[in-house]
Every structure is written in C-alpha cells, then in structure tokens.
Image (cartoon, rainbow, N blue to C red; front, side, top):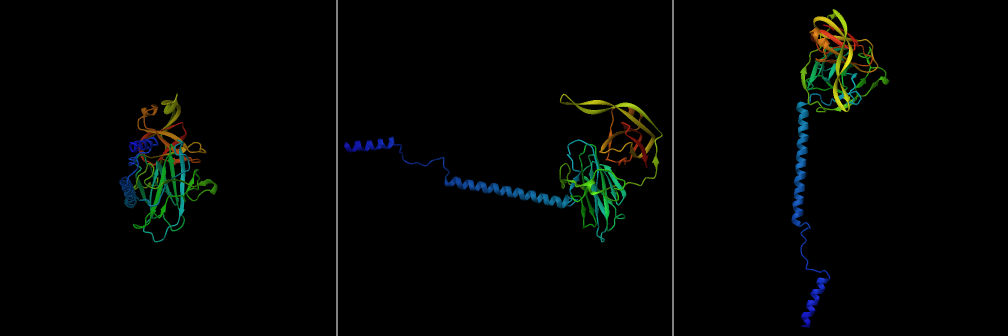
Length: 347
C-alpha cells in the first residue's frame, strides 16, 4: 500500500512540476525538410543562371546580326526631354580617316528631322515621322579626305524630343570607324561659318547620351540607301501674297481638364500657282532661342481660311534665319501663321 501510494505521489509530483515524456516537435525542420529545401534552392539558382545566360546570348547575337551601328550611341542636346519646348541645334564632329579605305559611307538617323552636312556640302536629310527604324546611308567617298573631315548634323524637334545616331563604314569588313558618342560637340546657335569649324569653346557642349540600340523608342536599325539632295537649279518666287485673320487650334487646361480652343492669329498666304519643290523659309527676325513656325501647304484656296487640316511646324535654331524643307512637295499655297517668315521655293 505504502509503495503504491509512493508511486502515485511520485507521478502526481511529476505532473505538478510540468514534466512529461519527451516527443518530437512537429514544428522543427526534420533532416528530410532541410534536404528538400536545399534542392529547391539549387533548382531555383540553376533556373536563374540558365535564364541569365540565355538573355546574355540573345543580346550578344542580336548585336551581332541586327546591330548596324557598332558602339555608336544615340545622342541629343542636354535638356529635359519632356519639357515640351522646341529644340533646334547642331551636332558636330571632326576626324581623320585612314588612307587605305575602300569607300566612305555615312549611316545615320536623326529623329524627328535632320539635315546632314559633310565637309561643307549639304548631303541630305528628311522628316522621319513614324519611319524611325531605318538608317539612311550616304556615300560621301568623293568628298572624304585623310585629314580634318567635318560632319555637321542639324537636328530639329517641335517638342524637344529626339535623338541622333551615326557611324561611318570604310570597307565591307571595317565598319563603324566613326561613331556618335561623348566626343561629339553640341552647338545651339547657328553661325555662318559653322560648316567650316566650331565656335569658341564657351559656345559648345557635350551631348546627352541616350544609349545604344535597342534604346528608348528606337529598336535595331536596318540600312537603306538614302536619296541625297539634288543641287538647286532654280528659285521660284510667289506670284502673290495676301494677309488674313484666322484661328489655330491649341490645347488649353481649363479647370484641370485639357480642351481644344481656337487662338486668333494673323496669317500670310503665298500663292505659287501649281509648283513642285522644297519650300524655303526666311525668318523675319532671328531669335535667341529655338522657335516653331507653323505653316500649312494647300492646293485649294478655300482650305486657307479654315482651322481644319494638317499643320507643319518648322523649327529654327537660335540665330538661324533660313531653313529649307527636307521634303519635296506638290502644292500651290503656303500659309505662314503669325506671318513670322517669308517663303520661296527651290527646285
């Protein structure tokens, strides 16, 4: 009895003091769980390495097969690309070439509009529009020299957004000898001697680098032969001009909402009769900053007095008074809103 009582007392004592027989805790990881976790980590790391390697190979082979500009970078002037202000400036570069070249071919794209000058000669240009995946190729072999070649590109954007990329090939195997990059100069003001040499150091700056293809809104670029400008043979003056009052549509923010409103403006229309050629605009007063001049081409006189229709904006750089349309057009009338410039036609 006493022994049984002692055993019961002992059991009770053990329960009272919180001691119980030990059992495995299911919340602690077992050796099997740890092995499984290690395997999952190894699998995840392997997948990451494979994906990274595939991406690297895709980039490598994409550059090998689709990149026509080598190490060339997209460049632009130093400014806030989203400020909406017009931009017109000149990218310049001077360089030597090896004497054993087979040819000298410039591959380039200036988006949204450019004019190319090489060794003082106007070569070509265009309004890019939506066609921003083609490199224009110009053969300048007859103008190239061994020493002190000079390339100038006029760039224009009505809203300040754009980019320039260029490279030069010398043989079938030796491509991208000269490329756009940080060694180019940006000149924001036109000078009559700009095609010959840069202005003083205080009037030039380094470009903003926007990256190599594919970058921003530009993909890899394909090459195509560009049409160089034909030297002008004739200048056509307008038959008459007349002024009138009209209105232009513009976006205004009223009460936090963007709406289209009409802004009254003076306009001058130039009548050339039916003509084909490139319009040349002469600004009445050169400004100290880039500025837009709004114009409309038309064939019907009735189109001149309505606010409907396609408007074109030509951007003048600071100090610039004369620019020529990059496109050859068929038209009769050119209307200049604000009467900011006069017009003739080069053929």
